[in-house]
Image (cartoon, rainbow, N blue to C red; front, side, top):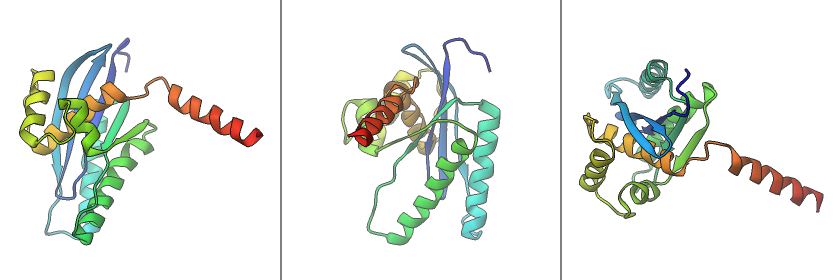
Length: 180
């Protein structure tokens, strides 16, 4: 998919009930909304079937929009261990789909995403939605999951290592340590 210097990015907000996704194009410092939405799983189905629904939905999104880079929100641990485990499994699907397609995948903590988009690490959902709307004025935000996914894509645009310099520097550093 030749787009010149434009890079297509996808942000994923993993969840077992709903996994949000948001696709943007980045040309230099300019961001352009492409698409957003969320994939629902049927709560009446077994966990394995729900994870399969999420995987199939994400595969369709990736096939339709052809992103080149992906970012996934890191999960936080809450008091409900069962819910945390289920979220982790949904997150695994969000990491696995782009990785299997050969795309680089970044992970960002929720506070990092909030800070990257709003300037405040403890911004609320309304503040995030307002900034996403300001940064992507043509976006029609589908729901809170899609809005969060677009915030993750924006974070990737601002913080992503698109040239692989960070990875190369880490490999060089590891090689130097082995030689010592």
